[in-house]
Image: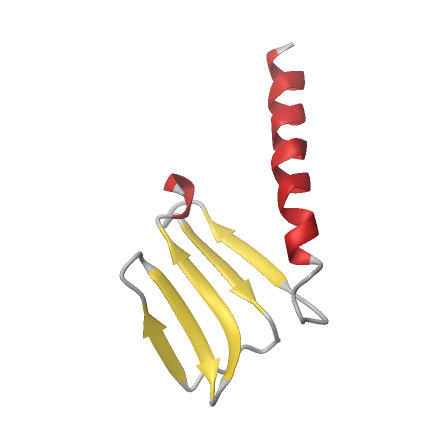
Length: 80
């Protein structure tokens, strides 16, 4: 029973973000999570060749190639 509830909660969480994700002006997206480091990597192109990284006050790194955002890195991802 507990496993079923976890699965249902997981699916509901995924479904909650789907409508926002499909509205992004992107053709492709890759998501990687490093559980040990608790870092979520979101890439909008592969390879992600960033020429500039902007660090925000809330532990998010915005990776850019000139003016185009090519990725986002979320530190301490499990606490969000």
